[in-house]
Length: 534
Image (cartoon, rainbow, N blue to C red; front, side, top):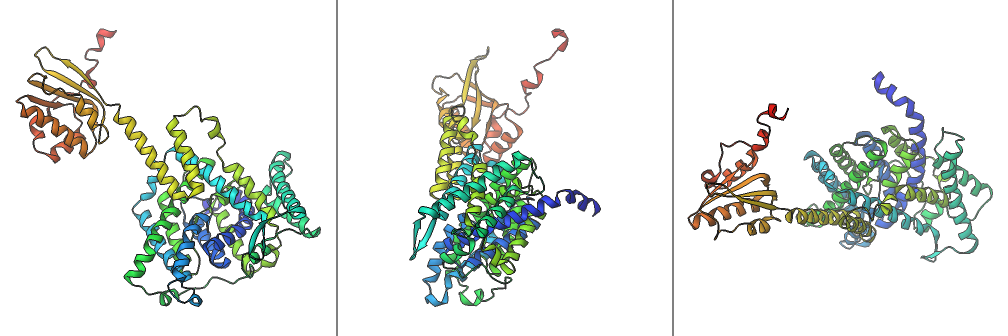
């Protein structure tokens, strides 16, 4: 226990201060995403608190911040709208369908963790990762542009005149302070983002600038303010909606999509934070923690959530490294809701927009521009495709598309690489030395290598530089064997690995007749008499 505390005390100050900074940035984000989903701001804030706290304690990546996200909110808006249509508008059934869906979403995520599916994030190619961070940076940037609008008679219009100049100036001042403070090396005790937010807030309050604040932002969106109490159990969810097969059919597709988006965004953010901190998180543990957090969030009236790349990067850049930073962020957010709402509502939106713009700059992989002419064109295409789809649709579609395209490119490149070296032994036996992987994509090329009609009576197919990878490959080998045997020619297969031999034996007993089992691998006997090389 002493060792546990000792390891964490040196960074406790940075974790606490970083957590406070993140909590300030979480407020408008959670509120905005709640509005996107079509629910009350407190539903988003409670989700940010509960998901953030539980994943900070039990998650697989210390220092990663979770909460209500836009990627999930854009899916939820349709769910809430359709749910409301299923009953009287005054019943607000959409909200209860949302809670039930979030609970089911959490169960799916726990199942993914138990089945250890988190490891599959390692299969995501680097161009997809770069496209992901670039697309997400653009999405964060575009979402902040909405803060440059104001609500006039229910319609959002761009700021003009003095209000626009003030907003732009405060955003620029925040960004300048975050950029300049580390260079001046005036203090290492406070995160530059927190100093910038506090300074700009005090400037706007004492000079009475007419700018949008957190409070005005909530009221413009239809909310009553930030003030709220502790989350309470929403057991009425189980009485408001019928738990029938029809309900399951309605909410399951949404729950599955939300679970997939949440896990993909969280696991990719985990990988990104791993790179930034040069450490390694646990993807499967994150899946289970996130699932448990969403179940509890659904029970307590939250909209669910997942990892937030923007806030996670703010935390890491501000010095947050351990679980303490995430715990402090979640608890401070709850404190804002319960005790300090009147003060937090006075924070100018411009200060938080400035912080998020610096996150955009830090998130975007600027190196991708330098390497565009140095990497394969297919990787360039995947990078741009994923970035574009992240902006146009959502993260899940973008990543799935990027992985599929990358897999197809890989399959095609390996399909055309298969070769067959041919030579004839002194006894007249023709040998085909196969080189390259034999799988569904390469079987057509593999079949074209053989000249069954004109080949001699004795054939050997040497797999020393190849392997039989799938069912299509097994069928292709069996087809070649049968064709040679049909015309009365003898064929044998040699230098198959033990794994390949077992695969072939299991599929068809005929392979026992043609595979040469007792044969040495010539690669192990290249140097038969080392003395002659001396």
